[in-house]
Image 1 (spheres, rainbow, N blue to C red):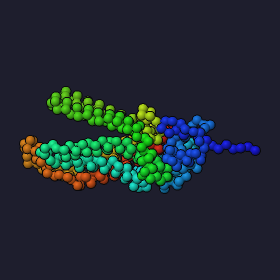
Image 2: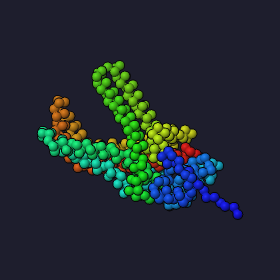
Image 3: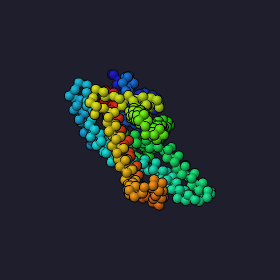
Length: 381
């Protein structure tokens, strides 16, 4: 009698391989939160890697309607071709629709992740406004404690940001795979990625900050040299250089959050994998490539943020243009604007708009998770 051996798998988590493990062991790891649908796995006797979600019988939850439609359309596309790699990427509209569906399915956990970072920031801002509201008061113990508290809240917000980023990735991938996960389970998994995501945050946001400082340097340089033809040409050339560097770096780090969390890579490997995936799909039409889709998604979000910022500043801008038409002295105009800012005090409408922006901010992370999963499938194919 021939004994059939159970399938055994090797699992890669945070760059390390674990196993061999049979299906029952994998289910235990999944229940403990140690195995995600996006973790790379391979058979013990094989060399090709796939995702844990592809193992039959491991993640059996029913996918959301949009996921089922996508799976059906993908199956039809594959059946009509010799190789699965011939399947075409989803349309951008389908990616955006699935983004909204995932956000709606996990609204309260996403809201919990948002509140996690918003509350310390709000406490710090209220304390800072309290200090700024009394500029002529002598420095006493109360003022020093308020300043220290505001600084601590700012540091706490920075410390929680990598958990927020990792939590968005984990929650989005779980819902996309058809499995519901709670807020605390998401936090439990997201905390494990804190060191790697925090290091990448320092690098990615640090480089973007340096590029913005370079833009301020260009503006200062143009003001220093005056309105000469050579100065204008040089400043324009520097501006073009800054735009090119900004765009190139944006491309290279397009999927840094996803490669860091889903692929279990280190800091350098995450950036390399992000660059390779962002530049993939060269055989596709330009509008189907991950690069241009990512740029379009980011542009939609930036347009929304600019609209929020414009709505916040509209009362001041309206007053500014009104004063500009009636006041000829720039110093008097500046004094009027400063006085108007101080007299306005706490703006409830502006705070509400900023909160609305933060509540919808997970949509950006979800969209890049969906784009990553779609692009990764084609890239591996």
